[in-house]
Length: 228
Image (tube, rainbow, N blue to C red; front, side, top):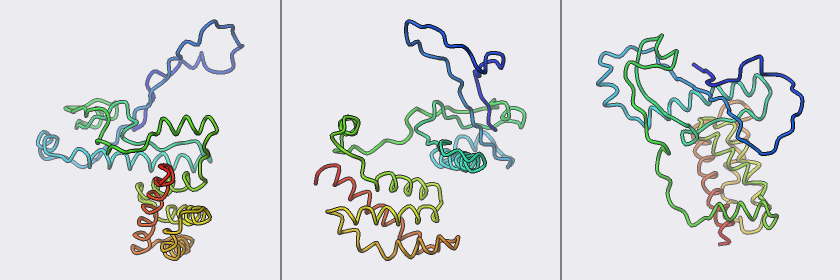
């Protein structure tokens, strides 16, 4: 169930004449609410809520939502429809209720999870410093960085065919760079996985090879960022 909260009234939408302003005041924005509803009945709703694996429940809901967003992106041919992660949610709630309740974003009983999700492992990397270097033109983004990120997102979303195709281009881009020779051992397996993806199916052994290659490329890119 998708809904928009705080949307501007229709009378206020559409073309408006430019107006003079003296300050950049924040503009109120609507908020989207996605409710993932399971139609399965609960024999003991209160016990289910108390005993469920919260992380697994949220991961499952995010996966369903991202499948819907991917379908919307393809249907509208809009490359800027982005998928979401748990960490980007303003609020995450898990609960149960009647059909009418949950369709309207209400519950018979629910819990609200803490902001931030899982703890992120500390790293020696300094993303703020690198961001400044990239914006300032002192560093450049390697072509493989975006490709590896997309491959990782595809793997996390259970899309091995897309991941294999992204992975093949990414590994070729890194192998063309100096200091990435350790990735050569993954080249043949990644090529086989990408060829399988062109047929529409990626067998389990190929999917595993893609996962291993993406992990190896992530390590190589991290070393590159750290100057190691």
